[in-house]
Image (cartoon, rainbow, N blue to C red; front, side):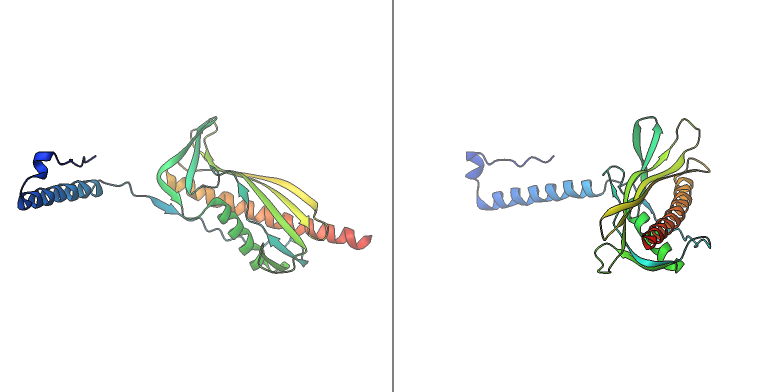
Length: 226
């Protein structure tokens, strides 16, 4: 910290050229101090962006209804750009020098939206607030998105989320399920951990997409029988 000197009465009575020289020297010292701070080495951060491509399953039913997706909700420590790791029990840390390119909630929402759109198995799917007249709404609660050692030598990429499918006409929950996917990493290196996350995200997205289509179709058929 650089202290700014106060002028004593004697200093205040110095000739103007001397006061100007003192001010100039002080400015140089201040700028020099700032440059030293700016030149401190910074730890580089590598950003990772898992981008799973999930093929549609022929067993998924064809849906003639429309769906809106709400952004997954999650605790702040879970839905973070820092890559979380649980080395032991309740201990919670993050990988140094590594970060997600986008939030876990956004990864899940983007992957699911693209999977359903590309599958051709549903009449329409869009994000909440897009303006489509959705028949159903999918609400997601992200519970875990972390690397967990769980007493093992190598960590696993764990994704846990709860899904609720709501019928918009009466706002009733027609189906709900908790999804849990754990994929072992090939090593403790961050790159391998991220690869494990991509596999977990791929599996979770496929399961969630198939369950959503099947649950909505089951409710539609039951309603038509009444």
